[in-house]
Length: 424
Image 1 (cartoon, rainbow, N blue to C red):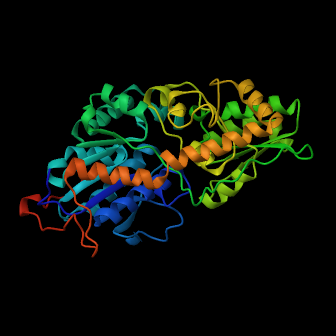
Image 2 (tube, one colour):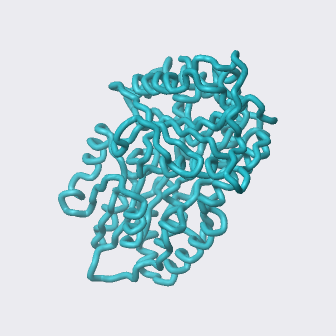
């Protein structure tokens, strides 16, 4: 495929940016790679509270960030608001060479109007709302009509995408089962920033201080945070233990989590921290004895698939990892790189913590091998390069010359391609 009418790359995402969340880390890595390689990248994402307004901002080499708004009382209203702002931004602009979307919330209208908007559509699938929505918004779990609409919009994006990018082989298999041609699917795992998550050997056990465990990420049942809490209860029967939870909490999630914590909070055995910059999170890793990735068996982890960024960051940091023995975990860590335990078992987590405490050499060996594995296979630099190669082989794009000339040239399209924009 060659581009003669397209103009630049548009990367659109219904995610907060910038943000300490994994999605924003992923977005930055990908748009920086595309900007450096091809130039002419416009990033459109939800404005984070730290962004002062909606004026365009230079983000990185070859990348301009356009913060957009999304107002509304619920997810549907917010998605519709985002689509309207996206359409307003797009109106009157030249046809794009490539449009890269991360969800149906921005992707579905683009898929419907693909021929008038772009030469090629990239659908990046990290998760699908038909599977994930019930975990974030349990009040809509039984809405059959909403689920039908979500599946239909996902199918449209899958069918119309020229390239599907996903971080997990499990997700790739699921997309093929949903009708995607295997030749259009590329698995590009997440990465870890090796300069931020610097390696340090595990802390030596000290009877004078409690065992400190770290869980970071979404506080939902799909992530298994409840198993981490129960493991903390079990451990406290035998030794002082503190579990640090880092991540965002919606109102209903906070109520549920506080109920689960119960006396653990009063006793100082659990501390709740807001999402933090990666540098602070890396330092927190080194202040803990083990990182927990207690993914349970469910459709999100075992059918749809995932690529837990927190697992890779923990492996890079050198803090020993205790993770569920699931295919999505085994694709990132071997048994000699992380302690792989039975999914859904707080007892197995507790036993792994005690094994690390009893055997200093075990933790050191896991730490060294985990870091080596991430350096070999899972740096962000490798992920960026894989994305650029996918654009080259799928769309025939050429990397920028040394003088910085964009390869995705801004060519004025024929008049009939200057269409309104993204419609609903």
